[in-house]
Image 1 (cartoon, rainbow, N blue to C red):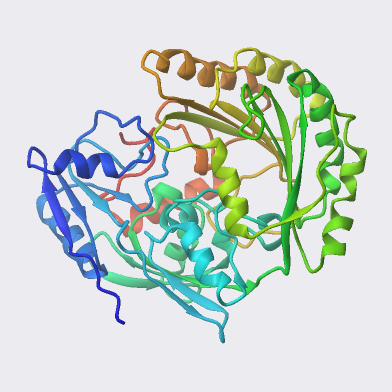
Image 2 (cartoon, rainbow, N blue to C red):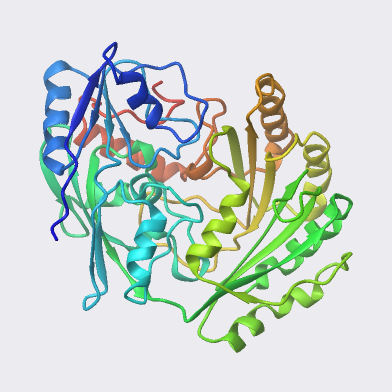
Length: 444
């Protein structure tokens, strides 16, 4: 049966349905006091062409939303047009050519469900609900990305609407500068992507993980060990730890060390995880390796990011040593609010050469702070914890990634200088009217 596409809808400011449409564009319950003149919920690519054409006619600037997981709600701006692409979510998979084409509104976990049926794989995001538009444009740190590369590295082409409202294609041999920008520019991309063309891989036969839980007092031991083993952890293994005052698994304060493995066999997975035997001595046994679907692994990750919460987040890349970071992280831990607020440390230790693309900033490890709250009156304390923590950690930061950006509140580099300069040249050439909004700290 043919899929019936939803109808395009639009809402002018002040009209019935406008505020619900604005609210719908952000997963974060914190919604900035910014109000577009018009919100368009596009259903097909032609709707996007028409909407950008209208913005050109009226001299409006354009914000673009795909999945709404931008914690800063970067796409919601005062005045102009807010273009909601969440309904452009079609997926087409060609197992023979190992390719897929996807709409920007397709959720990351939805793509994985399509691919699982064909025993295929793409490094989709760690969280449910993330729209592929924003995920792919900012780089795409997904499952097994240490081994197979950032998700944007597997983008082989894209269809986009330019600043004049013209539907175009970009790839290595056509509009190559736009293709370069699409792989890492994030919200600075000078167009509206309506379809991505992706290269796929065979699904790893074995997917699963192990966890180890420690009391908060073990922070120094866990951090030192993680830094020690991190560079030698096999690229098919993800290593991270999460610190919370109430872990989802136990309800108790603690640190959970999480490993996820992608392997050709159970024996290979266990071999790749052998480094866990050197872990610090903890209060209990570490459960054995548990094989599970990627969908289950993603659902378990979401235990730290419940729906219907306010969020303030920030992050940083670093190559600082454990000894350098320990005093700063001890201060971050001291001020850690009640759950579900938490912070993570993730081993990255990049071992791959990247293609020439806008994405250009990464480092050995990644630290992210997630301030979450529901109760009125908590905003000031939680927001202060995030901002104070980043001030404490900032001497060791080499930049940020756009997935957890907080640019409306704190500026930080997210591209190498030369790449940032090239991106601005491209934006100036293909979007001379500055039709499309850029980053929150540049043009709010």
